[in-house]
Length: 342
Ligand code: NAD
Ligand code: DAU
Image (cartoon, rainbow, N blue to C red; front, side, top):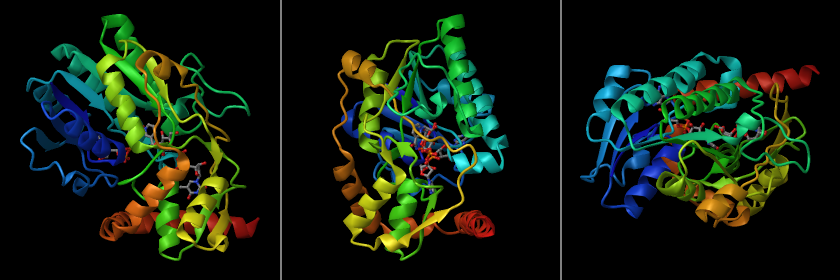
């Protein structure tokens, strides 16, 4: 089978391509990625020279390009490409609407015309919004996105749903909780905390640090995507998660303990506007229907992630240079300053 993977040079996409080509050496992958600030082709150096892997730099919003790639005997699409950082969407949501909404529409329309066998839309648990303590969102829960990022993903989910119902388009949607692991861009909580701790820098925690997220090791997410691609029912949504939400403070303290770094490096900064308090998904459907179970618990996953960032200092240095440095200084500088003015 030949797959078109979009956004394969980012965090989850690159982990998925490596996982998929190892698990299915008879299949091939065509990776379409615009190479935004979050992408890094080094993430794919292990597979770059394989005969069954090909990379094309381009935008999913470009209908001619997407159409011509799909005509290269592509049977299935796995759609990761997106703008993904909530804080950036709060600062300026335009690119989120363009890529996540218009880009997804462009891809859907081209894939429908081509008649692909399967379209896997990689979405997020953030579309359900913040959940009260003790509650879990199942796949029927209302979409109540809080951030412009989450709203753009929810919009793309609705477009996918409409294509399934109107055209009988063979799409499936996954909604996974927070991922972590190797190759994650260090603007996201865990790689930021691990690398800052290793560099002796402060660890900025928003608000009171009691917001809860359900952390999934990226390899577990990749296995779930592979199962859904293979056996998910068209038109259906599958939640993916560990089912064990933890507060940001708990998770960051675990990282500091693994690294044997002082808890004093934690610094509380002004909260994210509209900050969702708690995410939690009911994952009964994927477990029952597709037999997927997560294999990596938080303790093991954090130890593996810390080990990876520790041994990939060149990757971290590159990721934290250029545009990132400006973003980081401006963003966290503002947060600290606003806090001292309170
Ligand atoms: P990422 O930011 O690390 O990577 C996104 C990739 O998409 C980058 O390589 C970027 O260059 C590419 N891209 C962006 N705009 C593009 C465009 N217009 N055309 C082509 N390529 C483009 O993202 P990630 O964290 O790996 O997330 C991948 C997908 O998984 C996203 O759809 C995200 O919503 C979803 N997701 C992420 C998480 C998480 O915790 N990171 C959890 C659940 C779902
Ligand atoms: O739930 C899935 C989603 O997880 C994905 O769809 C998103 O693409 C991904 O970015 C992630 O969203 P979050 O907003 O949950 O992730 P982030 O890593 O930005 O933040 C995780 C938590 O940590 C959140 O409560 C905010 C907090 N945080 C984050 C950063 C970057 C801090 O306290 N300090 C920080 O510096």
